Amino acid sequence: EAAVTQSPRNKVTVTGGNVTLSCRQTNSHNYMYWYRQDTGHGLRLIHYSYGAGNLQIGDVPDGYKATRTTQEDFFLLLELASPSQTSLYFCASSRDPGEQYFGPGTRLTVL
Amino acid sequence: GDQVEQSPSALSLHEGTGSALRCNFTTTMRAVQWFRKNSRGSLINLFYLASGTKENGRLKSAFDSKERYSTLHIRDAQLEDSGTYFCAADPSSGSWQLIFGSGTQLTVMP
Image (cartoon, rainbow over all chains, first blue to last red; front, side):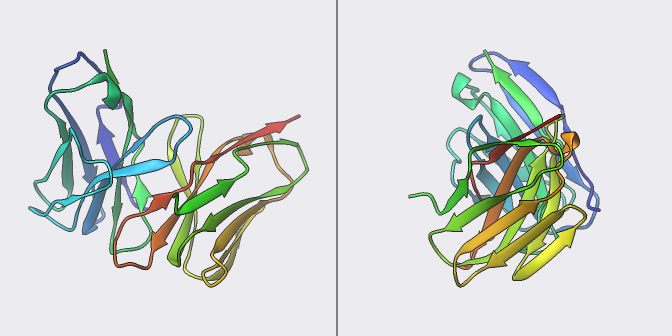
């Protein structure tokens, strides 16, 4: 079973604040993904990456940056957080285009 | 429009009964994944199918790429099966992202 961890698990910040969400996978997967999930909706892809140094834009990238520093680590950055970014954020990884394994999620609240 | 249409949006079952969830796709999909979101909010992988059917305990899933649908059957439902179930499809377009359905909120009652 693939292991994907996220930190922090919960975060509260204020409008205009700077937030970094962290994701680590220890299964040597090449692909990593950041999603957000809002009540009544499925997950929506923010950014994804093929490998260290690579970044691809997903479906809802506005207001988010991401960086893949190593094969294991993928970060999501909110430089000027807004209340519309209050959501549950999931990180996922996959060995190749195929089955994805998800982390436990980070609940972000922007006041 | 949405490429993945999941139904029903909510479902209530009594313990011991069963039902099916369905996802219809508006385009050809390469594969489908099914997840359950548990009470702690974690996404639990249930199935990954590129074709055919898979079964695991009281759960069975089928995927028909040509007919553009997938199903998840639950039999002998237990209280711990309650949660939100998502299907997610992998398009054949070369994109490596999953497109999620909006989820089915399952409540199993005593």
